[in-house]
Length: 298
Image (cartoon, helix red, strand yellow):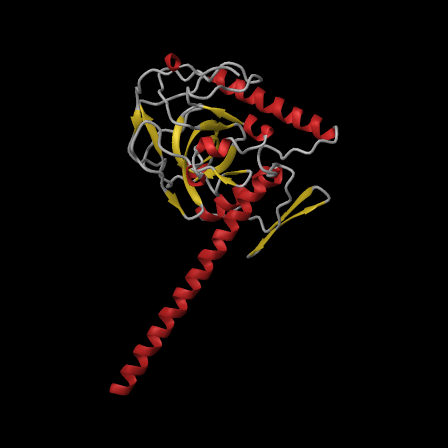
């Protein structure tokens, strides 16, 4: 394995900035940028919680339900209408909720370990990856791992995030190395599986081949012999939420990776509708009670 020696990581030259959002004028993300962002759903590797911790600061990790905030390196950015964007990132994991990175890492299968690139000088990178990632003067002595399986999600304009000050950017050459390495792992896994050896895929079995089915409201998303059938798309929708929803529907039609994101968005819409209905019923009951009291006093 290639060693991460201490002299490759100088003293910290940047710190975590204040919360910002694209809606409030924050510049669009840069490819390779190191950010602190909420990634939809928990990130689990072989069932282990990959909770991220703050690097180089004492700020604790934050979470909101099933959407923990993680440090991550931006792989791709695609702007969407309304200042939103499609974000694809490499999560940085510490396994903080499962006893720490080292104890968790040591229990993982070899193929899973291969998908975790250490960012600490205390751990060597896999031989098949080569030298440690070159992140300039960024210092890291904690046990953290970059997961080479990227996560893609829609970043709403109003969602807060944090970036390093000054910005910490992974060079394009290093991003390319990760891409090439991920393809190597994919081909290796396919080859070993073809030989009759069973290995869990590095992403825990979640990939483009998953079939997503959702029926919420007037929308229907289902898979028919590998073809995605989508109904209820209003391409002339005026309201921002409908436009955003239809954008997701179009993305899911073109790329299976967006089916899960669309299903999650539709589920959130349904929850909001149910909550609004409950609030409406409560207001109506309160109004009727006021009317009854008024009629009694008359």
